[in-house]
Length: 131
Image (cartoon, rainbow, N blue to C red; front, side):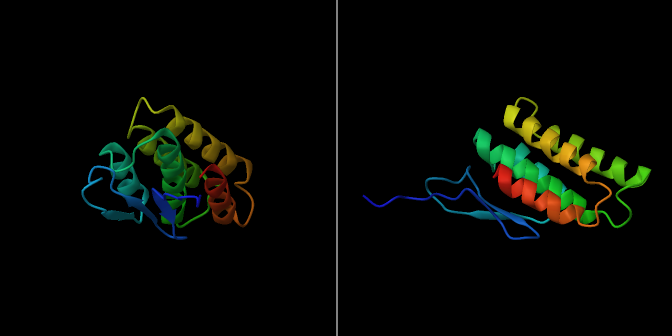
């Protein structure tokens, strides 16, 4: 029997695309998020459903938040920005355990590699690992 693969989200490298779970099964509608605020809304408004998908969405939202920052991540401003991204995404679904787990993992990775010259690549790889 052939395997059926269902994709609820797709990372493009600069956006995350979701199947709008609210529209299923009658319609197949896609929503593209290009920043962490749009990802926050997708999680909050239940466009994304299911613990693993919520965790992966939060991880990619964290990456998008990092992409929005233009400056030195290893500065008070850079650290504050990423903390704010984490807190905003965490507030999208306060009871979602996978959401908090993914965000803690992403933020720990950020803090651990903050001085590296390729923090965006490192965060993207971490999000892909979570997904």
